[in-house]
Each structure stands twice: as C-alpha cells, then as structure tokens.
Amino acid sequence: MPRVKDELLELWRFRSLLWQLVRRDLKVRYKNSRLGFFWSVAPPLMQVAVITFALKHATDFAKGFESYSAYVLAGMIPWTYFQTAVLDASQSILLMYGVIKKVYLPREIIPLAGAISNFIHFLLSWLVFFVYLWGISRAPILPTTLWLPYLAFVQFMLVTAICLLVACLNVFYEDVKYIVSILMSLALFVLPIIYVVEQPLYRGSRWLHGIGFQLYMLNPLTSLITGYRKALLEPPPRSVLGGPSLPLDVGNLLLTGLISFVLLVASYAYFNSRKWQFVERP
Amino acid sequence: MTSASLAGTEEPMARPAICIENLHKTFLLRHRTAGTIKRAVLNAFLRNPVERREVLKGINLTIQRGETAAIVGRNGSGKSTLLALIARVYKPTSGHIQVNGTVAPLLELGAGFHPDLTGAENLGLYGAILGLTSRQIRERAAQIVEFAFDTPDLAEKIDVPMRNYSDGMKMRLGFSVAIHTDPDILIVDEVLAVGDEAFQQKCLRKITELQQRGKTILFVSHDMNVVRRVATRVIWLHDGIIRMDGDVDAVVDAYTRSAEPPAP
Image (cartoon, rainbow over all chains, first blue to last red; front, side):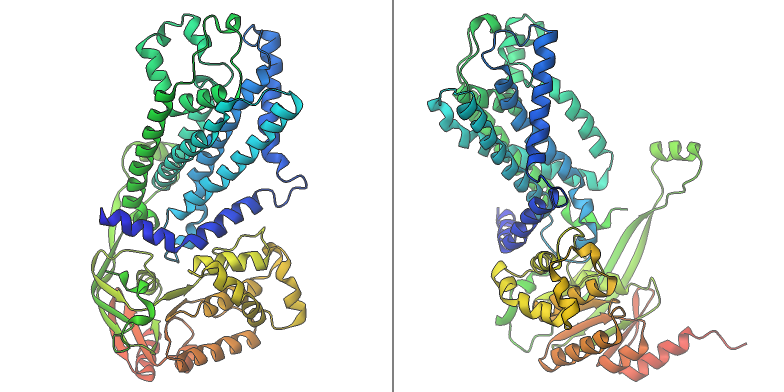
C-alpha cells in the first residue's frame, strides 16, 4: 500500500512537531498549578480510596481481599488513561483549528500528541502504583510483571485507535464528545474496575456464562484490565471469588493485541480519508 | 499533485515557483437560521440546506521564482482561499497546483500560540509547526528573538507567558519565526499591518532582503501603499477569477478606481 507508506513518511518528516506538541501537552497541563504531576495521580487515588471505603462498608464485594484497593487501582490506572486520552482527543482538532486552517501539517499529529502525552502520564502512574505495592504494602514481585510492557503497548495501540476515530468524528459531529462522556460513565461499571471478572462469573449472572463470558473478555479493555491484575497481583482467595481464580489467559491477551492493532490500522485509514475535510466542514 | 514542496533545493532553478492550472474550489455552506426553539428542533431533524459556493472559478497563474506578487480584491473575492490552497491547507476541487520549494505561511495573530507557554516555548512550537527540526530551532532561536524583540525591555519578556504579550509583540514573534524558517515561498495574509512603525519598517526591509535573495513572496493586502512599495506584480481577484494581472501601477490604479463610488 504505497499511500500508507507516504502518509507514514510524511508523519516521520514532522516528528519534531509531534515531539513539541507532546512536550506542550505535558507542560501546559499543570502549568498554572503548584503541585503539578500530583494532580494527575491524585484523582484516581482519591477515587480508589472512596470506592474502597464505600464498598468495604456497604457490600461484601470487597470482603476477604488481601488488598482490595490494589485491585481497584490496577483497574483504575488503565481506565483513567483510556478515559482522559479519549476525552482529550475529542476536542483536540477543534482546539487547533486556527492552526490547521492556515498551515499544512499532517493532521493526525494532533490526536497522536495527546495520546502520547497521556501515555507518559499512564507510565508515571504505574510508578506510583509500584511504590505503593512493593514499597508500602510489601507485596511480592511476581515474575509475570514482565507482561507489563506488552500490556502497556497493546493499550497504547487501542487508545490511539479510539483517539484518532473520536477526534475525527467530533470535527463533523460535535455530539460525539457528549456521547463519549456518557459511555465513559457507563463503562466504569461495565468494565471490571470495582470488581474482578471472576465475581460476576461465579455469582451466577446468567449473561456471563459460556459464550457471554467469552464475549465479555473479547472487549479489549476488559481483557487488558484483567491482564494487568493477573500479571501484577496475587489472586484473591477462592472464598471471595466463589470459585477458582482464572489463570492469566495468554491466548486472550494475544487476541486483544491483534484486535487493537487491527483497530489502529482501520481507524488510521479512516482518519486519513477524512483529514483534508476538517477545514471545510460546512 | 502538490508533492513538490518536499523537493526543496534540488529543483532546477528554471521551474516556476508556483504553477496553477484551471483551479476551482467549491465550499459547502450550511445556513443555520437560529432563533426559536421550534426552529432548533426542526433543524436537528431536517438537514439544513447546504449551499455549494464556488469561491475560485478557474484560476490560471504562474509565479516565477523571485517575484513578489500582491493579491488584491474585495472581501470574499477568494484571496485567502487561493493562498490557503497554495499552502496546502485545502485540496483543490478541480485543477492543478504545483509548488516548487518550501512554503511558510505567516500565521494570523495568536494562531498556534499557547497563552500559558512562554514566548521561548511558543517559538519552538511555532517553528515546528512551520516544519523546522528541533535542531534548526535551537540554532535559530537567538536570531529569531533578536529580530523580534530588538530592545532590551522587550527581549527580557521572552520567558514570560504569552498571555502577557500585547498583540503587537505576538505579531513580531510570529513574523520573526516565519522569516527565519528560510522558506522558498513566503505567504503573508493581511497581517503586516500590526506592529509599530519601527517594526513595520523593519519587516519591509526584511522583505526587500528576501527579494534580493531571490525568494518568492505572495501576499494579500488592502494597503495600496504597501503594495506599491513592495510588489513586483499585482493580481486582482474579483469574484473568484483573475480580473487583471500585471504591472503594479496599472493594476492598483484600476482596482482603486473600481472601488470608488460611481459618479453621480
């Protein structure tokens, strides 16, 4: 496909702009605040604290976990990355509208820069997580931690794919950003963030048996969040789950990698097919 | 089609800087009649009427290397659209544009600048938008600042957030960055009018210097004094077609006469 090659070459030619935009994002985000990076770690930490408190006292959901908050945090960090990156992307092109109306530049650079700067925040959040997990909680370092780079990379492809798609669509239909933010608040409960996948599976929800569970695990985010937990944390006791803990599912994770890659290619192609119409929307 | 701006310097000198053949550009315009809630609800369900407006109706134009062409014409005659097509912001609806050499458009005030970043940081960002590499930006930063802020009281503001800049200072920095990208073709769309007298003089001198170095300049202006002083050729666009093209004085005189109210 010669056209894709040309597009990628053109992107490479503008790499210094991409780098400048990433740096701008990182700098601007906390430019006027005193505590800087703290503000990107604080919201998920506070959320985890509130969820842990509420669920420990209101339900038996969290009972029996060695460290329930570590589980929630391991779901919340990838989730926060996905959410902020996609919400940022939905506005990204319109924020740069004044520039793209005047200057030629590969338009995909704009959502890409947002996806990359959010990825950097995501990696920093894991650092905070490990300080908590290994430094404060003294949890053992599992050999499966080596899965983390693979999982982070797959998630980067997935997030970038959705960012490109949402950024492009929102130029033409500004309803998209509202739809996205509603879906986000739903997804917080649909995804296994405040619970682990075994809980609904063994609790006899009739949707989550057999093929239903397979489909649920086909969602790349479900698969990734579950993957992070299985790779980094020891399984919760059987009594909490209501059955045996499922092993780290290598096949499922490889499939998720493939799905994310295909999504990225498709969404990049779609973005490119429409990117020259951005400045001409009626 | 417009791949030529990649080519840069290895192009033979004989080729014209810009070659435009039978260029058409049509935009879709959606009319939104705002007002009542009933109207708004209807608009959400019915598709608003879309008008196709042909802004450029067949432009043929060749601009040689080293020319300074001024484009004049009434508001809405297609001047900015033509410049944007040359800068590759729009794709032609039909027809052909060939641009030989690198193009730097001089941005409008504030576009591309981020208010929370300092002048120095914005300089890097804007330079990258215009296609400079990180290394080129580092090498040229000092020159750019010196050209933009020639007095000490201005120069010390380079590390202050851009929101504390006046419009004139943003203009100075923007012009300075665009000039120092050392483009083969500089595109200026009605922004030279900002800046104090001293800086305007300096810009005009810089433009003269670029002309002497054989650069191609394309600018839109409503200031006929600037046009007469700088341009080597004037193109008068009227309603999407070229009405007159050629000698500076002849075209400017004709254009000025057309703008006068008809004699009673």
